[in-house]
Amino acid sequence: MEKDPVILSAKGLTKKFGGLTAVNNISFELKRGEILGLIGPNGSGKTTLVNLLAGNLRSAGGEIYFNGISIKGLPPYRIGRIGVARTFQIVKPFPGMTVLENIAVGAMNGRSGKKRTIKKAFSIAEEVLEFTGLSNDSGSLAENLSVASRKKLEMAKTLAMDPEVIFFDEVMAGLNHKEIDRSTEIIQKIRERGISVLMIEHVMRAIRSITDRIFVLHHGNKIAEGTPEQVLNDSEVIKAYLGKRYEQLIK
Amino acid sequence: MKKNLLLISILILFSLSPFLTSNNFLIRFLTDILIFSILASSWNIIGGYTGYASFGNVVFFGIGAYSTSILMSNTGLGFFVSMILGGIIAALFALLMGLPILRLKGHYFAIATLGVAEAIKALVQNLNITEGNSGIYLPPPEMSVDGIYTFFFYVTLIVLALLLFLTSIIFKNKFGYNLKAIRENEDSANSMGINTTIYKSAAFSLSGFFSGLAGGIYAFQQGFIKPEPVFNVLITIKMIVMSVFGGLGSLFGPLIGAFTIETISEFLSSYFLVAHTLFLGIVIILMILFAPKGMLDIFINIRKKGLSYFRKNIEEHRV
Image 1: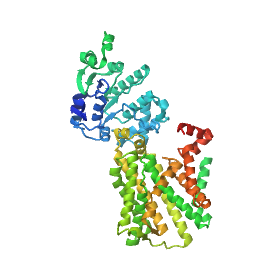
Image 2: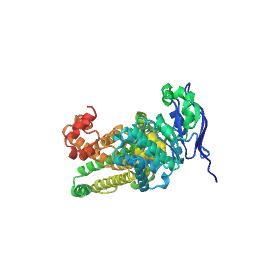
Image 3: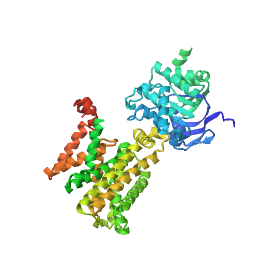
Image 4: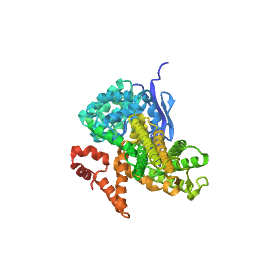
């Protein structure tokens, strides 16, 4: 059977907080093996959208499909187990556990946790540690990590879950140029493993270099969608998000 | 290796104490310490490892005590069967109570558990089967006087050993790692595929089971139980203080806590009949100030850091 080219899709997702419509009738498709960028000004509903997709928030309206199955309304742990992993914008490590243990918890649970023994989970955690460049921090407590390492740990925890889809919520915020390049490289390698990625990011350098497509939120509405070229030159996107200076910069 | 040998010889010496002394008072005192070690160690599973500070764990002790008493005096079942059934009933109760209450966090969870414990005490005080406030008598053990002391010492020791063995296995496995993950960050644990409700309830149940066994032993040892002493909130407080005093979320912490607190309090009360709780309070406050991570942490760090360990604690916690 031919696999559906779309791995995750949302149709008409809506979420209201009191009188405020944080996410308004959003539909999008994430294709298999693709890196899809999600950008927009602060408060435009990006994180709310990810919270809806990952089950952390209950949506008011709309549908979410993963591999053709509706996952709307499932609790976060069920979504984590079927193969959808996420990072948190405000990082949520297990502070009192070592970096290796943090990652091993992902390997013990997630999509393949049931098939793995504790020993296997730790050996997978070692691999992921290597892959994300955290090997030197293996034994230190997560609470003692630098910001850059914490962001990497967030990525590592999701990777260990053996997911098919990962949502990266601003994993590059607060990093310096060198660290951004490293993380960009890691995300590219993740895609090479066949994992589909939805990434929220403000770092334009990274967004432009690795995403296949981008869609833009503004006040909860989707205002643009397309290739990075198209979207970043869209006059409405420049007005709402990128700003006049950016326009001058690219000219 | 040398350290382990010392530890093992202390443990062997301790477990042989009924044969080393004919002082029944001492054996009874050690048994009491062991009962509190079971209680503090079971509290540690939910409060220390899972991070849910229960203020109502005495309810499992009370339910275990009452179930054992009712089974023994009404159905004629033997002590061991009744005690284990008592533990199971306490575990089931923990499961039922946990499903709604473990959704609460922090202070709210603490208050809810306290509320349930007080409510169950009131229920026991007013039910026919528990004979209300007049209490229940248990059939006395058919043994010699010395034999009774030795019997309770070993029953308690075996239950404690079983609990510690189980805990040490759990926390080397997925179940234990997931509980710790829940303590460290429940949202993250949930998103990683951990069904937090099930894990928390299981931990609470396990805590309830062993507290219930301790209740059963206590009831048979006393021969007579009443609602007020076995549902006394002070027992919960003791479990918490002992766990924190010894070292939260560690295997032997609660054990060390139970031993030191009980010994200090026994020593103080023999010298200061009225004011001994005042001095005990001071000891606990000093402990929290100078070594908030408990006695176990002192043992681990004092050799490396010396007295600066205490100074650092004070600085870190801005006293």
